[in-house]
Image 1 (cartoon, rainbow over the protein chains, first blue to last red):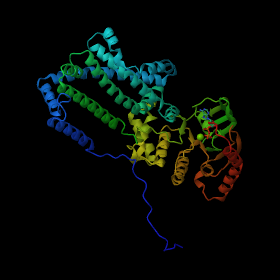
Image 2: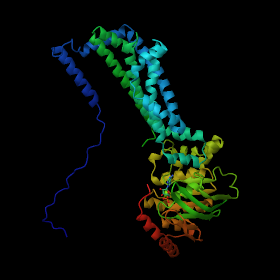
Image 3: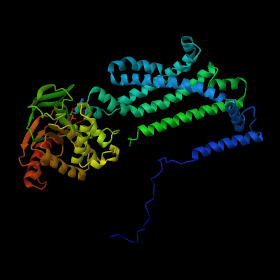
Image 4: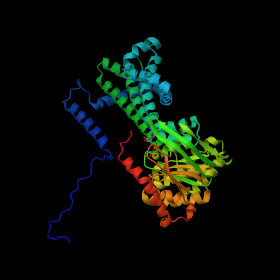
Length: 267
Length: 255
Ligand SMILES: Nc1ncnc2c1ncn2[C@@H]1O[C@H](COP(=O)(O)OP(=O)(O)O)[C@@H](O)[C@H]1O
Ligand SMILES: [Mg+2]
């Protein structure tokens, strides 16, 4: 049947790839190489200290901040505003988003409004907020609340819309009450989207709090950066920016943990 | 409890889906509804289950459901409809939680139905960890937990591969035998229909009318897939259905 004189060769492999796999240490390695190059550039004078201070100087500024005890003051100021604003914005946004998802009338009334207000850069409203709520904490918290409200609303009702309708029909077919269906089927089904919304809103909250502190505050990381900038203390400025980055990373890590814990059931 | 469907017609907007469907399902009997896809089988079942309101006609429950029945008309869905965030036991528990049972009673029922569907050792598994056949067994366990008077099954085996379907059919035969269930079983598979049904109803293409009704009186657990009498019935049903199925095949889909 087979002609043994026919040339035979193995089938060429042409699959594979396009499947990201975790490569540990690659991320930290890139970071370390960049910082090392930067440090080397600064030491050898390739990068003038006027243009960009060496990382070691920024670290020095940070240590100084820590030793003087001001670090905690700034962190506490930023963190309390952030938490208060973000938590209230998320709770309120979640409730509004749920209402939009559940009631046609609320959707018809509020969804266009949310779409209109979402794209406004909220920082532009800070002067208004200062007039309304005063120069103190209230205006900053209100700014964050307002900034995190809209993405939370949009993600929440998007999540509610995407809950599998057959699951809801299933609940009805077993005679579950309305509240049971909302609590046991709709909310857990919308949770992945709500957590994605938290990721976005927490980033927005960090950007807004710093912007607000840059404009009007005595305490807080934004204020620290602002003072450093006005004095051209670039080492302190870099230290402040690095703090923000750590802030963002920490929040991201916390949300990733929450996702892993709450969405264990996902395939 | 007997189920009586009288002159049922239904439409979605301009599309007539059901046309004057009449059907009686006696207690302890399974009615199989077969018909080409899109003929309104799922719609019929949704109407019977009270998930939609009929355009005209009536669906009557004759006689009181048994006192201990928590949800007289109970569904089994084609795609299982399990909550992915609940474990096997949690999914069964879901349908018991709104009935004012004590935790003890609920646990007892859950343990019992999982035992009966051979799922006891998987009670803490999530749906994503289960095979298709096991998922459907969870759905069956959940349905049994509320002690239904009538089971409404919408192509319960269609999402399964053919071996699993064969095994599940044996499971269902067992179930009919043990529980003396009343049910409507929708399928497009005539093999399933002649194995599992006492009354087989063939529906026309949309708008669905009843074309033919065939009674099979032998108890389901005595039926053998290779029984020539069943094969003759199946052929007969296929002849009744073939032209309809062919016509549907040549239609443009409505949506
Ligand atoms: N909610 C709905 N709105 C509009 N049309 C529908 C709806 N549900 C089903 N239909 C239409 O009704 C017809 C019958 O559907 P269905 O009962 O699902 O058929 P089957 O289950 O027999 O395949 C189909 O043409 C389908 O497109
Ligand atoms: Mg169907």
